Amino acid sequence: MRVLVLAVGRMKKGAEAELADRYLKRAVQAGRAIGIRSIEIVEIRESRAADADRRKLEEAIAIANVIPDGALVVLLDERGEGFSSAAFADQLGRWRDGGQAVTAFVIGGADGLSETLRDKARITLNFGQATWPHQLVRIMLLEQLYRAITIMSGHPYHRD
Image (cartoon, rainbow, N blue to C red; front, side, top):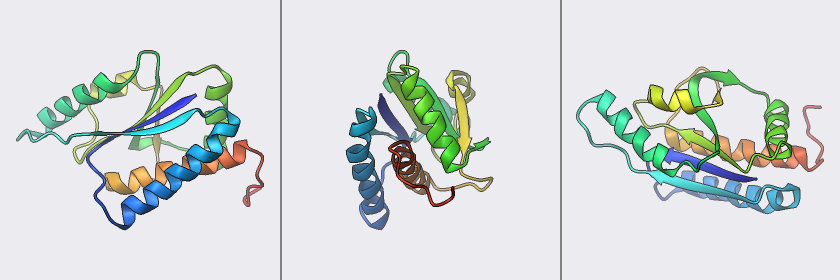
């Protein structure tokens, strides 16, 4: 399975980028052994439109243009469903085992995600009820992907 992280906005150089890179490298390396072929990050340019609805629409179009046909779409949004790390690993494993070729995780910009993207999503996840900056959401997603891969690999999980 191929995993895409589609994120509106750029990760600027610094501690956040270094942490994101660290989790990405770990997840990619560990994932190969369990059928996670690749994990790729695609940065989507933030819209400069004056109106929030227009910004969300322009970002949604840019995101939709890079989602491969047949990809399972997962949105990250504070209104989504919370998963424990073990449940997230179980879900990721079911998608992989079910033959899902591509899973695309979508992180919106400052204005959130358009309804058109919500209609394409199989599931909407959250990392709590708080609103997080997209850079931190990216780091948290990469950490959870890495953690899920280690759980799927049979490494002991300290919460069991």
